Structure formats: C-alpha cells, structure tokens
Image (tube, rainbow over all chains, first blue to last red; front, side, top):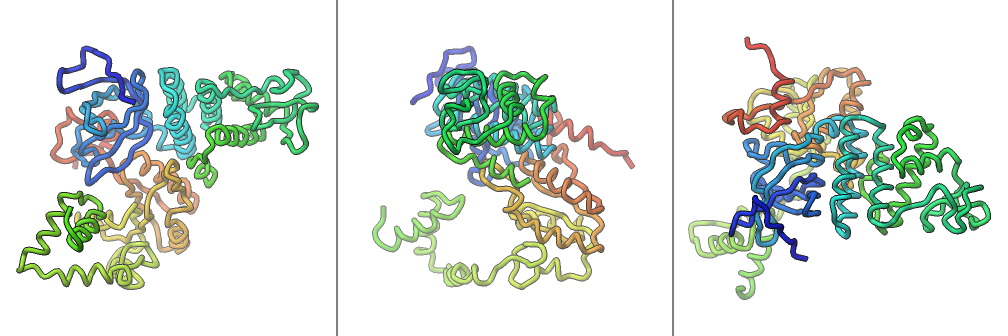
Length: 255
Length: 198
C-alpha cells in the first residue's frame, strides 16, 4: 500500500521530503557503508529507509540511527525504499539500554514485537506505548523482564488480542481461577479447565493482571517465582498469537 | 541478457557482496576482452581457498596454518587479548601499529533479533584462554554499535569475576570531524572519556 504523505510544512515540492518523530526498531547492513533502517513513526507508522554512509566514522548520522533511538527524522521518497535525509535526537535510549545486557535482551523482544505487530496495525498508540516502554527500560524504573512483559500484553491489547486474567475466559466467573489456557486467551476456572491445562499460582495471575493494567505497585513487589512463571506465559501467548517464534526470546533465555 | 557462458559468468560474479549487475557485467567483459589479464591465478585461488584457509584454533582468526601468525609469534604480548567481532577487524587494528598483544575473534555479535546469542559466538575458547594465568587484560574492541556495546557488557559481566582486567576501546570524536556535527551520544562519550593533557 502506498504510504499517504501528509502535506506538511516540511514537504518540499518534487523532493517529496516528509518528517516524523520515529523510534528505530532494527537495522540491516546494506552494501559497503549503508544500512536499511526500520522505524516506527508517530504519524506514518512503519517506515523502512536507507541511511547512506551511516557506517562510516564521519557519517552525519553518528549514533542517531541505532536501535532504540528516538529521532525526529526527515525522509526523501525513493524508488523502492525511502532515503533518510536527516535525523536529530529526541531521546537517546540506545546507550543506557545496550550497556546493560538484561535491558538489551528485553529491549530486543520489545522492538521485535513492535516490528511484527505494526506490520498489520498502524497508528500512534503503538508509538506511544513503545516510547514509554523503552524510556522505562533506559531509566531503569522497573526490572527489564517486567517492562518487557507489560509491553507485550499491552501491545497485544492494542492489536486486538487482549488476554484476560481476572476472570474465566469461558464462563466469566472470577473464582476459583487457577489455570491459564494459552489457546483460549487467558485464565480459566477449575470447572472450565480441560485436563492438561497448566495450573498457575494466584500470585502469578495477579502479576499478569498488574502488567496488563500497568499497576507497577503490584508488579514491583512480585516474587521471583511469579515473574518467571508470568514471563513464560507471556512468551507462550505472544508466540501463539503471532504464530511464529520470536528469536529474541530464544536468545534471551541463553543468558 | 547475454548468451551462454558469459551470462553465467555475470550471474556468478553478481552473487558477490557489493557487486551489482552492472559491475558484474563490467568485470566479465574485462576478463574476456583484456588480453594482458591472466585469470588463471584468480581462478586457482577461488577453487582452493576454502581448503586452504581455516580458523586459528586459538583465536578464531583466518589462517592457512593450524595457528595464525599472531598467536604463534613469541614476540607478541600474550598477556593481553583484544576481542574483536570479525577477522577483518584484526587487520584494521594491525594497521595502526599501536597494539602488540594477541586477538580473539568472536565471529559476530549478540543480536537477539537475528537469532545470534552468546552460544553462537566463539566464547568457549576465550574462556579456556582466560583460564591460563598469563592473561592479565582483555580489551573489548567490538564495534561502537548497540549490538557491539551489548556484547561488550555481556563479556565484561562474564570475564570480571575471573579476576582479569577488562577494558573497552575509547569512543569519541573522529579525527578530522567538526564538533558541531557530532551526535549527542558520541559527544557525551567524548566528554565522559576525556583525559588529562600531557
């Protein structure tokens, strides 16, 4: 689908320049010194553009087009891919995230999820959520695994796959619920749970609900057991919904 | 489109990185038309290079022997190991003539989105080398990218408990560049890494 270009003050006649605040999701090497940059723009959604000469030490972009950076970028319409014409830093999140390995692996899952989800869904809700998640990760407000879990649940909610953890997804009863059925999209009560449905602790369900709502007072005081159990449920649900393996989750488990 | 073997040659040349269809066509015509050029040397090298070149058993650098010339050189300082991403980084550092230690080539960087984690890197031999008490310093010389920094932070976390000094290459303003064009991260690092003027 051809991206519609809003007529803004930055549009420049035949040069087809457009400008957007955007978060760098990932980069791929191209040729000798270029990179293809994948960004999530506030207005334009997913943008893929070539940054020429960005791998040279004297590049005008410097570190501005590294993953996790938030930039105000100008793009020029190209034949197949757009060209990055300029970029200025809005939030320099790449440095604090990459210098801490746990933040880095969590950040990779966050941007990989954003990259996949925004293929089908555009709009600035994803941008706002991603900006908040990376900011929290960079500042170290909460442990990286909690930020990652909360981001995934809320991004899936925006995309229309909201899981339910505070009541049974089949009958709606609020108790007793002590199982999670990934394929049904959340918690199930003891009566609705079919044999073989994994049982989970009440504290894990409470943490999952807190992460879904962004209730950090509950999330920050959760036990390590609840964190580990909720992380595996979130990863399983994400990969079930997306019908694909998330590479960064597999690699994150190696550490 | 050309007929027969010339098109096959163009297609094969076009599979090399950085060689597009036009460049491939130019090279193919040069080989065919320039009578002074003898392609047998290149053809011979291409045919045997994979059997000739392999990885150094100590550092992972490319070599024709079991051990590369740097690892087998007794004049090098074997107490300092410089960790780099690729074999071509060894050549770049050697060109500076500033470093006389030895190297360790990781064979990549940790890139979770591309499925590359610590287990896919050449780390087992590095840990084995650090077990030898002669090593006193490890210099982390991965690229100054997000992936390079993250790999450095992982290695630092892994090596420091062993008791070996871990250092990271300095980063800052490139020589010959104007300060006003430096991005915020580069300039920030240049400030945090400033040193006394001797």
